[in-house]
View (tube, one colour):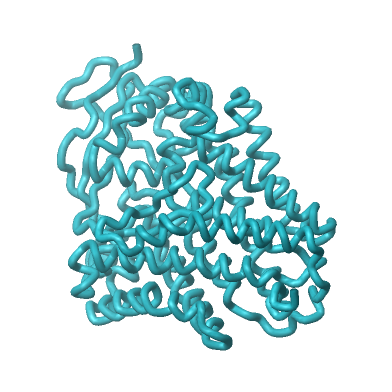
Length: 467
């Protein structure tokens, strides 16, 4: 079938798959470094307790056959090494069937983590990574030219990511329609980056331009992905530029980097003809067409969701995360709240008790500490702390267990933090306090050197003590 392959996209496929492998590497690395405190046997939301009430059908995972922290570590570090090998080109050094097995294994290993990760893995980019990884199984390696059906599916995935995000904004907060959302968003986003203070202080007309450009990128450009070249490449290239802008303005884990990778499914790079021109074997064509038919059949639910007034955001319609719906920031916070954890070594609490603060790696704490750049790495605890500040409902399952582990001086938990104010012995009491944060003005920044100004509001979690 001459129409089946597109040799001109061989270089684009190479870039797409290498970037995707890098994101898998980051995902497995974050899991390996953070799981013990979050979902380990003695974590805040232990996997064994979760699986006790979940069947394999409800939570398909290799851990259904038995869980141990040692086994999770082996899986996560094994996934890290495998992703690193694929990034280095292993999938192009093995036969076509071997390449497919490598990508299938990456998908299976990460699926096993996500399906037991509970609230720590409830972010849309987890499903996005899994869906992209499933498609990568069928994209082939340098033995064959890229298959047209799978390139189409990558465009369909990118379309849903961007168009879904655009629709959820238009249907959501009024500030997206009057072009004022970015007056607030750079300050109130989950995890500001090193340049977010500067983005926040852009003039209001530029904020309006930012919002208008966002609407164009998410509602106009995705439609052009399905047009002939070179228009599709221009649209994909413009989408890459908008993603780089988002990368500069904040930390959104690997969402933006993965979206850039997807864009290469439509961004045709020159000089690719020599990379892969061989005709695909029949068995491969059959598998690709079967996978394409499956994805198109499963696409009914996400497509219907896009047209629905009750549009769901970041939702998986199946436990394998094969075809999902995406979207982000349908509503924008006008005020930034932060939950600050504090401890004291004093056994008896009085009005004069001295409390010392724990510092997180990514979320705001010390007003003089400049926000850092962590994306594409995902600081899961820091992100959930942002949700906790919005409403205690988000923190109900894990905040008290978090405080209990601080009281116990749990090493795995403390490794998730930037600063432990009790390095020699755990505190006697731990509490949480709610603050209102805002970026300092230019004048305040020059005078004090602080990036933030904060106002104490109330105690968020009453003092807890060691039992």
